[in-house]
Each structure stands twice: as C-alpha cells, then as structure tokens.
Image (cartoon, rainbow, N blue to C red; front, side, top):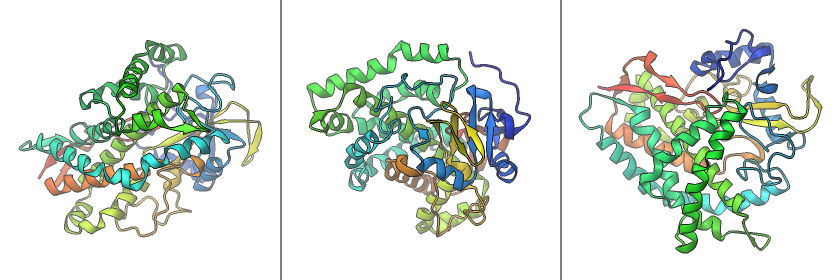
Length: 404
C-alpha cells in the first residue's frame, strides 16, 4: 500500500508533489517558491530538487551533460547507472540520452508528421460525436469520465493497430506509472513482474509480424537503425511510451480545458460565437493548464544556481510552473483565449520536446470543437466535486457538469 506521508509544512525544504494541497491547487505554491526559493529541495523520495522559474526549468531541460533522462518519473525506486538499459532507456526516446536520443527520435518523426496526424482527425471527430451521443438527454454528465478520458486512449489504440475494445486495459498500468509513485519499490516491482502489459504487447507484436498492417506497430517493427531492425526492447519500450505519454497527458488537457470553460461563461460564450478563436484558445489552455511535469536524475555532482546537487538526486521539471512565470508571460496567472504570442512549454523544452505535439493539439482542438457544438452552455455542478490526479501529470479526474 502507498505510504501515508506527513503533510508538507515548508514547501521550500520539504515539498511533495503528491501532497493533497499540491494536488488540489499547485499554483500558489509555485508563486510562493518563485518569490522566495526558486530551487526548492526535499528529502522525500531519497532527495529531490524543484526549480520553478522559467529560466531555471529551461536551463535544466537543455542541459544533457548534468542531467540524465534515464528515468523521468520520480518514485521510491531510484535507479543507479547500471539499473536501466543504456543507451536506450526503458521508453525510448524519452528515456534516452545523447548520442542515442537523436537517432531514436528521428526514427519516430515520420509517424507523427502533420499529414499522418491529419489522417486521424476523422476518426477522432467520429469518436467525440459517439461519446457525446451517449450523453444525449442527460442533464448532468462528467466531462472527464464520460468524455475526455476516452479520446486519447482510443486514438492511441487506433494508431498502434490494437483492438478498440482493449483500450481500457491500459488504464491500470498508466495509473501505476504516473500516480502510484509513493508505493514502495517492492510494490511497484510486483506490478511490473506480473508481466500483464508485456504479455499483451508481445501478443500484438506477434500478430503484426505475421500480418503487417498500416499502423504504428508495424512501422516500428519495420524500422531500422544503422541498417538493423530495432531491438525488441526498443519496440516494446516505445509502445509503452506512447501509451503513457500520449494518453493521460492529453485527456488531462481536454478535461482541464472543459473545467475552465464550465466556470468562465464569458470565454465559453466567446468561443461559441467566434469559433475561429479555437486555435489560440487551445494554445492558451495548454499554457495555463499544462499537465506534464517531467523528471531528471542528476548525472554528476555540480552547483546549480548556488545549490549543491549530487549525482543520483532526482529533479522535477515542472513545465506548468514555467508557464505561470510572470517574468516570461504577461498576466501569467490569467487565461486569455485570444493570447497572440504564446511560446509556452506545455510540450517541454530542449531535446525531449514532445514528439506528439501535433497529435495532442489535434485531439484537444477536435474534442473542444465537438463539445462546444453539442453543449455550448454548461457549468460545474459543484466545484468541490472536481478531483485532480496526483503525481507528474495533473488533470481533473472528475468534472461533473450541468448542461444549461
């Protein structure tokens, strides 16, 4: 079972990104730290650092010499230099470092090119309509549970060429990786040792080897690096990455956007009246409610902004905090759906900037367009009933709304 951690008493010296206060509303915490202690530290999880200013987050993201991406989720399991397969990592390319990283990333670029993503838009739109049809006539629905959480899950399953009815199999694994980070090392390893996900993926790989398809699984199986087919662990790891990085993150962004619109009738009415604003609104929702905080391991002892970091320390890389830095964005704490200049960090910074950004943008845009067509006027049933995920991907897990 997860540990019962004591509540945080000092965010500068004892922060915890799973603390209920952080989960409910991290923005005041980041504001306080930005003003008083821009690089916080905690002994929790064996020692973790937290920069909150945009310039510091960017500095870490671009520094591949002092920070390694071998593990990108802070937990009680702290991998040593020999614990993860080098140079691939468990989920390439996000867990890969140079010089292997650019090779692994370049390999995936064609699969996420604009035309490939454009080809998925019709399926995504049909899916959104199907989900909305299922809510027809209901005076109250849950914008997260009934809508947002299904969309990226089924789109990724479609991209991989897996049966649509298998989509929900991935939910438990995603939760274990991203939310149950305070389980003990033994408990997390026990879930991995069950081998359920590996067995499922291996079965799908075998099917695609026997009968190749025009999908991402066959793309990976046919891909080559330096004239050689990809190592099986590389193929499996990249598929796991797509499930984790491409599902929870995007459903969180969709849910947070609908949560915002449910509370802000002026924005809701303006989007309904001016649908041409959707492109800038999408970027602003991504900035203001960026879901993803990544992690790094300190690769070698060194001084960062006067803080003595040690090899093996964790470091959280909170792109959502960078997006709320008033030194980088005017009115950083305000949502302006017509914000024209918006170089946000929702998709990360540096070499690991999200390769699936085109996909996420398309899913968010289509999800909002179809929702607003069907339900242009809605509100939260009770703000206190909205619940948020813990861990490094932040998004609403329940958003009960009343259709007006």
